[in-house]
Image (spheres, rainbow, N blue to C red):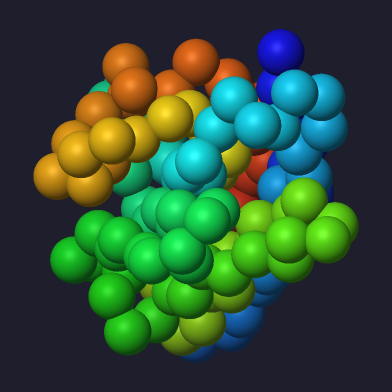
Length: 126
């Protein structure tokens, strides 16, 4: 099993920044890809960004490209999401997930990831 714990959510004004962290514990060899999804009430969960833990290759949703950056601290087994120039439409609950990704074209599929955190709220006011 892999346990994931998110931290770093909060409230900011438009244009502000936040950093989310996801700490992984347990059988971390079971995952080679970690990803952030987000969800707002009444909408489907959508992918935000992901990173291969072995190569540090990254993937981003077009809506956050150039504003968000995903990175990892291998020693600390932590993946971070730096979010800059936040906008009200970024308001959501952000979830960290982990799994084994063999085809990077499938990175946005929720079903790939068996391990999920509890989520952390990000609120951006205009």
